[in-house]
Image (tube, rainbow, N blue to C red; front, side, top):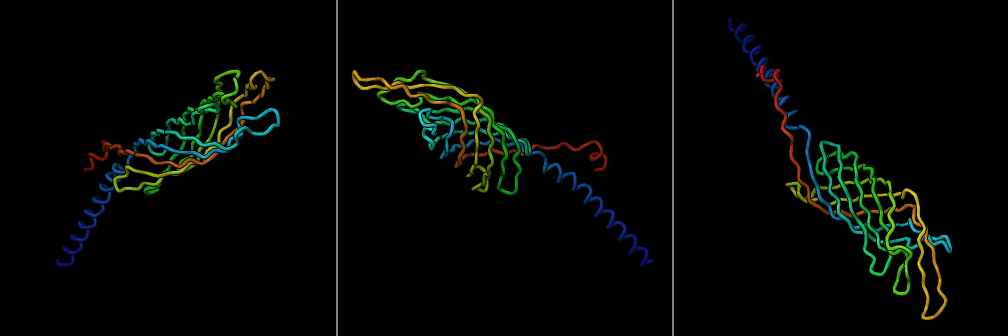
Length: 228
């Protein structure tokens, strides 16, 4: 009788343990449901620029420049999409403004997020080669571009709000255009310099921003309810 009771008790304990595990698994899956997120980053970008060529010598005009920008990203689980805007005003000339949409993949590991993004947008060139003594042929020219970004962000605080990150990026203009600047001294001979717009640029962006995440709840299925 004693051995029979021990076997019965062992069987009941094993059944309870199996039931507990089977009920805990759906709950864990529900807690780890798709993650919704939104982030806003400001960034600065040292840039190597071959998108403007001086046609007198075939060399890049201002081959290095700086840009500042803002990025907003939305993610559903590992999928991400959003927009970026960056550039640098030209007080006397050579202003630049880029506006684009980004989309791609953003896997997560702990407090780190890794990003592989495609980019599509437009780039505006303002007063190329301009200064106080020149007159541009056109004030602004806009070209489309395609690009890619590879980077990561790291969460700084326990609540996951503040993050630092970096992007390596490349852009390629779609099409080209030719603009010119006319310069001359007082009463002297005028000189016309032509520039070809369209090429490629790339660089590294240093990012700092805010992030907001929310786990999407998963309702139990009918099978799970009946098992409970």
